[in-house]
Length: 110
Image (cartoon, rainbow, N blue to C red; front, top):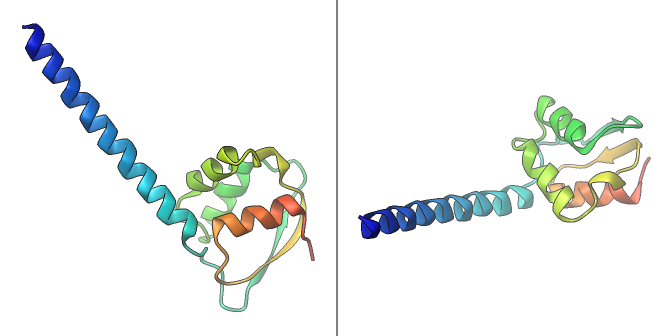
């Protein structure tokens, strides 16, 4: 009986580990992909008081970001979630989540 419980526990642990590994791989791929910015670029206004979650959801609603939670994770993991600055930003095609975060934290407004 104890062997069966132990085997069941190990199987669950293995399945959970595979799930975490797979999610991490998807995250790594997503943060390296360019955002869906129009070919001529766009100006994005980040309002004062906007949270990282609000920013990610807004970008997703506008169709620029497929996985908003990955942008949140990236910002929190890097300790920059609370460091984004309000303003108007010029976003060019090909920009990745990492580059976007760097621009918002540096406050490189137009």
